[in-house]
Amino acid sequence: MACTALTKGRGLDCNRISGGVKNIYFGVYDKFVDPIDGTGIVQASGEITDIEMVAGTGSGLFRYTTPLGVASITETITGSRENGTIFYTPTVNVVLNKLTKEDQNEIKLLGQTKVVIFAELNATLDNGHNVIVGLGVTNGMELNAGTMDSGAAFGDRNGYTLTFDGLEPAPFAMVADYTTNPFDNGAFTNVSIDPS
Image (cartoon, rainbow, N blue to C red; front, side, top):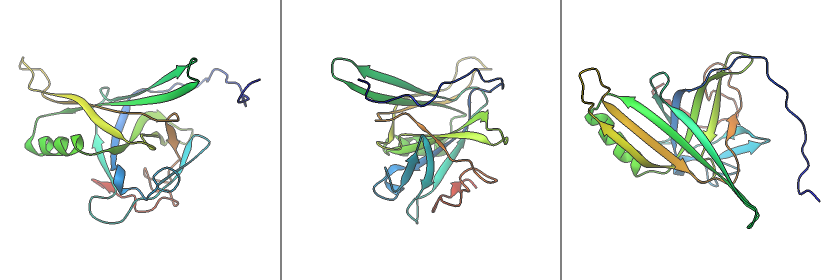
């Protein structure tokens, strides 16, 4: 007997899509209303329908715009027949060009902070708005690997490569579509974007 019944099939989509990540938004895990899963971030049927953050300093989302074609998100599904378990490991790879002391300080803070990450993809919805997904919405994400590279040749990139990962009980969810700008949804509370 099956534990869960499937609800629908999937055909071949005739639309073209674009890969890659346009913007990464970091939210400090402790700045979402407690409990984060169910109040701070509400999910229904694979969609984030509500985000509530506490008001005050350090709250809101911090946007990092990435160079075209270098940032990515991946989610690995791991199951065990023997144990009857399944879990999801989201990974976010971010590349930032140019080494600066300001970025060094922020990256140090990112390394000390559990975050929830929202990735604005290059893929679009039917209305032309970008798809946004939430990663680490239950247990958070952490900076666990990265490099700071000067490059060797004159034309080499210098900058940062950062890898965040997490461990979640469910796959990442899509954020409900926005009105005009990302995260301007009426149901979202205290969700400001820096830089605006």
